[in-house]
Image (cartoon, rainbow, N blue to C red; front, side):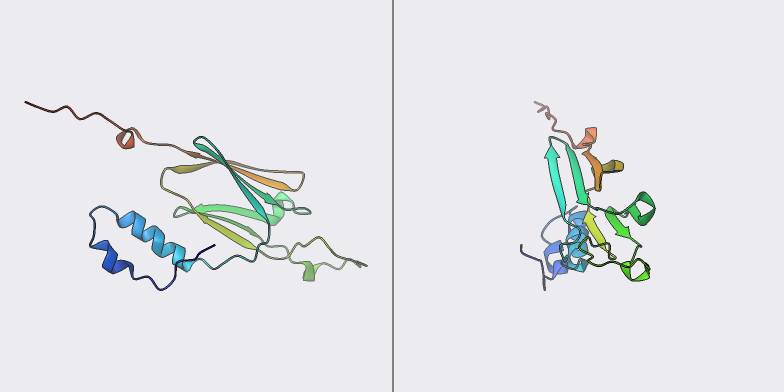
Amino acid sequence: MTYISNISFPQLRGLGLGFDAMFDALEAFQEFQPHQGYPPYNLIRDGENYTLELALAGFTEKDLTVELKDNKLSIENKRDDATQNDDYIHRGIASRFFRREWLLHDDVVVKSAELNNGMLSISLEKIIPAEKKPKIIKIKS
């Protein structure tokens, strides 16, 4: 995977008009830190619908926060194994703190989130507004 680094977007902004949102999104990507791979996730596309699945064995709805703010979808847990007093002989199922973020396009909306059998599924949909759909321009004579 390639990460964007050391790119100066102000110089590129002068190359086009109306692309401010795109450049803002690219600058936001620069703020993201590479993930450690926990928890693992799947991203599935079905036409204009998407499903984001995270493997979260051992977590409950109370342990998780799913937030959408400024086109950033964040999933975070507050549970920390260090605060639990159980006497484990072996602990192979992690429940450490994590925060995962995805930047969503303006046209993508979060429809629902469901935790079932250790799998958090978030349903998303790309809704194309009428003004962004293709249209035929009549030529006047």
